[in-house]
Length: 119
Image (cartoon, rainbow, N blue to C red):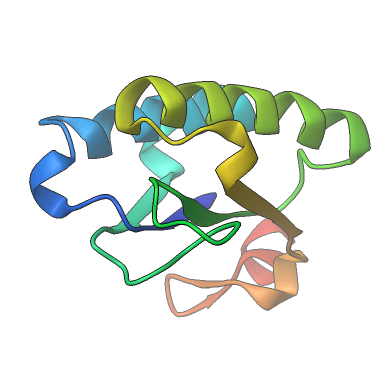
């Protein structure tokens, strides 16, 4: 159920074709979960600054049940940052990534929760 949410001041017209699907692959690999369980939401063209400039920047969040922790998050931060630099020109110093490790009872799916599904 990983969900990656990206808010960026990069214009929608500057988002490369196929970016959503490429992002899905990167997140799937980083979090070590199948692509068919990953959701990606991109919010381009945000009115935002970082460090007092309007150069390309972002705030992002990766939510998942598990596969997160101090060492995991460092590696995921590296992979996500490199991808955003390559694809959108967002320097790693201009994006904060919030990692949220959700508990299975906090996520609804199929009319129930993951905790109930996994019992």
